[in-house]
Amino acid sequence: MKKILQLLKNNFTLVIIIIAVIFGLTGGLIASLITRVYLLDNYYNIPFFGEINFSNNNGQKELIIRDAKKVVVEQNIKINETINTVENSLVGIFKKRTSQLVENETKKNVKSELAATTVDLNNFYQLDEPQGQGLIITSDGWIVSDFQLPDLSSGVVKNNKINLTNYVIITKDRKVYEIDKLAKDSLTPFSFLHITATNLSVRKFADKQEIKNGNLILAVNWSGNSFLSSIMGQYKKINSQVYSSDNFLTKLVLTANPPEEFKGASLFNLGGDIVALIDNQGEIRPITQLLGAINSLLQYKEVKRASLGINYLDLSSLVKISILPEDNDKGAIIYQDADNIAVVKGSPAEKAGLKAGDIIISVENFELNQDNNLTEIIQAHIAGDKVTINYLRGNAQKQVDVVLGQIK
Image (cartoon, rainbow, N blue to C red; front, top):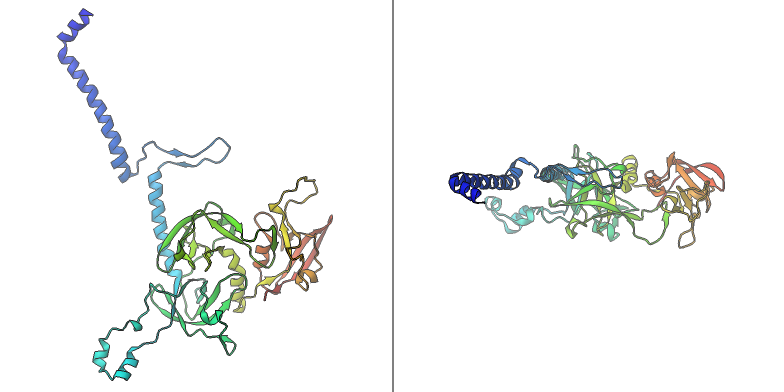
């Protein structure tokens, strides 16, 4: 021990140098970490720990984010790009104004030079105060909207036509259009308005396969406000397992619901495709529910919703207590509703001979399963279409052609 102390005394300078080196290395390491986390990572997106791993041991696919901050930045950029892209497909619906300038000149006999300098807000549309909003769906002027024109809701009809002259459509490029046609959808709260225009900005409809749980969607309204959420699933408003071939009972559910100001807004994926619309009750309806109406509109200039006339159970959402090899786990079994109606009297289904207990397994070669339900397939058609239905009655497989009726 004495020798060690003597050695330290004789080499005091060396000890000081060693201690200084140790403290210098420690301080350098701490400074490097601080710089990397708070400075370099913000500017160069360099991850502190290299990656974030959300994988598990349950056989599910791995989700690894190697640079969380970069992901957030790129997502924000994509959201802004989507908003800028889809805004041109949105329109505002305004109460029609007539110029007060000429009237004021006549009534007050004001000199034209003075009248030209008079600013009267009655001569302007205030873009932040629309009566409603809509979405352009065809380049030649068809627009879908949840806005209920008072003339329509009050039943005021002149010469068998709704008076549309009290409202105008304004596009994002500030052009004002008269409404010349209106068609009401019988299955949803939406209406279709038409303006005489060409080369309007139109967005693609998202495929059904793209409207899945977990997908991000962006609500955008006429005012330019946006709301980001994701699809959580679907719910059925009526508490029953019985569905109708002639009515949509399910709505989309989001992880976070858009505020009140987004009623009537449109929802897009981050690619700018139309995913859903929000109706005037705040219900979120996938765009797939409107495709049949839109196809009818393009073909006949009116909405002719298809009717089959049955109530059914979706077997893909049910599991039997005891399953035999011959039992079906998919398809639609015709079943009575709360009013004890399985097949509507006088309906196309009754005329085709379909009965309670029959199991419809496909329509036009589209198999009924968890991805395709009967209502969606029927409502993708138009009244008057002939469809081939394959079904089981007991153990016998049968086929019948049905001409779809029209929902009144």
